[in-house]
Amino acid sequence: MSVPARAAALLVAVAMVIGLGVFVALYYIGSASSLATVHYSASNGVVNVVLQEDPQNDSSSKPDWVSYYVQDPGTKQWVHTTLFSIPANAKVNVTIYGYDGCTPLRNNFFSQVQGTIGGTVNLSQFDQKGKEYVTNNTTSVINSWSDCNVGHTFAIPAMGIFVPVATPNANLSANNLCSSSPCGTSGNPYALETFSFMAPNHGGVFRWQCFVPCGGGYIDGNGGPMQTFGYMMGEMDVVSS
Amino acid sequence: MREPRHGLRLLAIWFVLALVADLLIWFAWYPHLPPGDMSESAKHQQFDIAVLAVMAAPVVIAVLLYFGYAIVVWRAKPDDDGDGEPIYGNTKVQLIWIAGTSLIVLSLAVFGTVELIGPAGAGAGEGPSPVWKLAGTQTASWTPGGNDMLQVQVIGQQWDWTYRYPQFGGMESSTLYLPLDTPVTFHVTSLDVIHSFWAYQLGVKADANPQVDNVAYTTAKQLGGFTVRCNELCGIWHGAMYNYGKVVSQTDFQTWAAGVQDKEQADGLIADLPAYALTYDPTVLSELTSSNNINKVDGITGAAGYYYPPSDPVTP
Image (cartoon, rainbow over all chains, first blue to last red; front, top):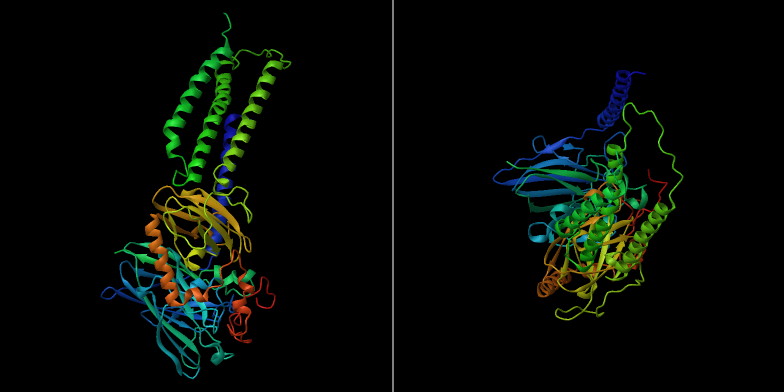
């Protein structure tokens, strides 16, 4: 075979390998579900982020996975995603509605509220009839090993933020948890938790996750929703102006 | 034309190149080699890497030089179709090669063993019963100014590190603070899967296995920050499993640790943590198995007040 023929054959082979690689990459990227990102903007330097965590979700593929939802600030609709963006250098007020039941933390250290303004959260709990049995309790610890009080956490490790997310009281809400997502406050027991933190003064993407092993059916509860965007882990995009 | 003395020529070129390379490695590269000299173990690792590089460079240069020399000098001319000279082996060359490489490898084996023993296990995890221990006084509480060994339990879980200080009431922190010039014992463990504690600038690396107490030692010699990474693939966020540590003066450390201990005691957190132990399995803690301490409500979603088991065929 002549040199030009061999060179041509080599070029064709290389092009085929590269083409195959590009096809595989595009195929997998293309098949990945596209999650919506909820964008929050600041008013007078303050952003209000609203989340809820549910015992299930409204997806068709994994309806029994526990899941977070993010509220769209414009429409007030709940979006099944864990991606949201906030402006840099803003005070972020977070409200979390906790509808799921309790699971203890593997490390009870994360029962301590860390990284919020004042190192505390404000907690209220309601039963399914709307009766408030804990009112505006400002606390720095929600013990996940006593009274079955913690369902999940909202944690941004790179910012030192660790917040245990309370559940409705176990005894008062047993068998009465919300069963259709996204959940609403009417007819469902829930915990209402608020806290604030300062957004970084620079842009960047920050991972947030749950530290409660809540992935039922997976090794030690650490798989499934614990490791999937749109369920119990997500990203907070801090946008610099 | 008289054939030049290739062996002598090669030896001369090799000697000059190897000498230049080794001088560059020792004086220009060595001070910047990882992991630096923030601790005794890191300093030893930096020295080890420099020694290995100095030993390896002449060998690499010899191979590449011979390769290049053969291509340039001994290549066949375009009109030369003759065979090369038949070679039947050279006992002298073979003996020199075998003896030389054996000497290098055995020397490095001895050197490596000595270095592993010398600085208390070279910053590596030695398991629950370390053979090469770091000198220091074992005390129930730590005070600055002496030679008290500081105990730090390193706890890995998907996907973060926390640090527990048994000499300060068993308080726990998200940040690894260490005092300067103090012998430190790390007790490395995990609450779920296998991780690896890697305090890079300190030259400390120890696997974090569930229910295993893996002991490693260090003595920080410089003030400043360092990075702690996970060095064992442990799930989707393995790459993001890192946080930071800080070496501070002994008095600053005492102030910091006592402050954290006071806050966690006031918050009731220390009382909510399990009693300090070198390892613990969170799923069988007495704090959770005692019926007085946690409500387990069958039928409620979540894990009914308890942990999901390692394998759970009921839930999807």
